[in-house]
Image (cartoon, rainbow, N blue to C red; front, side):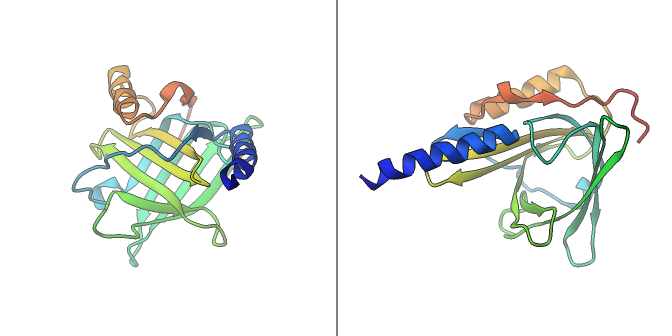
Length: 188
């Protein structure tokens, strides 16, 4: 009986996250495999956003991230993108590994008062692409997901994108929500 009282709340929460752009799902987060033997050092440097699940906290074109390893083992994340009015939106984040047994299961936040969210590297070759996923359960009834394909260049081969979509689909992640980030005319 208590479960039926929680259902409207869960639906409302999932609706709010959908309006803000994240991708909601019913049930628990899908089970995924992360990159085996992940090494943070070759991951450092610039990455360009190729595709993503829409996110309320991210907009514009020429979106990129630059990762810098800090002496304390954390990673400084410099995200920037060009807004429609031409202004550059910059967000600085903190990325770290909360459990060394799982080096590809990272956590990130972009405000010191904010909780860390999942940043799981599903697959990367370090020099061409990385495939990042995040999922949070909502009351055990639903979930909210984020998914990104980043690349070292402003574009990557469509066959690689298709392979990454197949990988996600195999985990039960609905890639139909992916949107392409405009990287045309970017100077960074």
